[in-house]
Every structure is written in structure tokens, then in C-alpha cells.
Amino acid sequence: MKEFHQVWLQILKPLRPLKGFIFSFGYFPLTKALLTNSKRAGDNAKGIDPADGPLFVILINPTWDLPENDEQVYSAVEDLIQKFKKIASEKGLLHRYIFTNYGYHKEDVLAGYGEESAKKLREVSEKYDPNGVFQKAVPGGFKLPKV
Image (cartoon, rainbow, N blue to C red; front, side, top):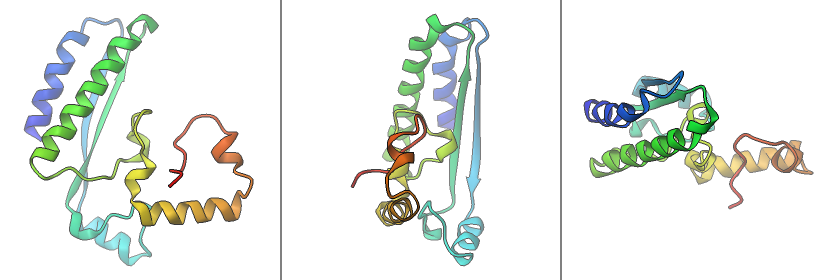
């Protein structure tokens, strides 16, 4: 966590002068107790085995005022995500799960739920939305992985 914080501070430094720039950063735990109780209650769409825990989700949430700064901020966020993933991977701590509400728009968030959960989500989609309106006609949001 300290290493993530240090990397975030490095990425943050050149962005600080941007008009209206604020960059929230937080950790949210997924304890073994939470994962175990979730499994006992009928499991969850995340498909996280309690043995995978404890885990934590990271929130990185930049805001800024000027559209001309979009590319600089998006580039910094993408760099930060890659550095975080590399650090976690090198330590054997990278988990496939990405919290949907915190997912970056370029990430395949729902694929991170695992194949079994993705299969269940596709089955529900086919049952309640057989024409795929939500998957095809509703803009935005994360869509179910095809395979």
C-alpha cells in the first residue's frame, strides 16, 4: 500500500497545477470475513473465493475543470493503472477482480468477474433481455464479455 501511495504521488505531481484538479485515492478492503459471508449468503457475481482474500480495491478518481487537460489526465491515469498492476503482479498479489464502480472505461471490468460468473451473467441477460437491448442499444457502462 505504501508503494502504491508513492507511485500515486509521483503521477500526481505534474497534474497539480491543472485548473480545478483534485485526485482522490483510497483503499477499500475485501476481508476474508466479507468474502466468506458473501459465499454463505449465496455467493456473488464477483466470483471471488474467500481463499483469495483478504484483498483491497483501489479508488483513483481525478477531477479537473478544462477539457484541454483531458489527454494529460487520461494518460496519467493509464500510466498509474499499469504501474499498480505491475507492482501487484511482481508481488504475486494481482487479482483479476476490478470493482465495477471504480473501473476505468478502457478496462474489461466484467471479464474480471471470472468465467463462471460471466457465464451466469450472460445466462441472466439472455433470459431477461433476449434481444440484447442493454448490451447493444444502451450507451455507456460495461458490457458482458462475448466469450
